[in-house]
Length: 76
Image (tube, rainbow, N blue to C red; front, side, top):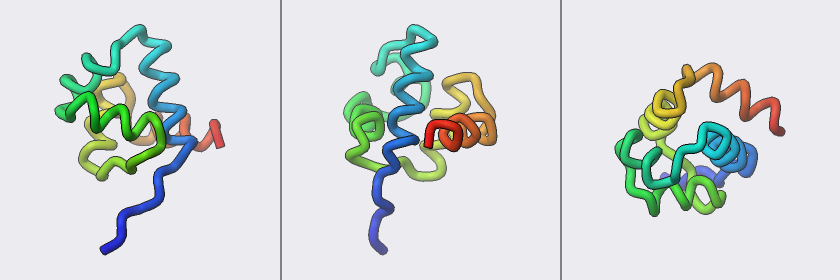
């Protein structure tokens, strides 16, 4: 099964929200249960997160899935 093409709006939104909260990439990665390298690839639009990772990132940013999705949609 091919992997989904990374979404630049998702990448930019995750990074923007993380920076607005003053959270380091490493701290968010730990909280979301992913490596800092994996989070970096997501933020740089080099990889797409799995659904599980997406939901954990949303929660780690203090957002519901729908709130994160809405922020991504607004950025497109």
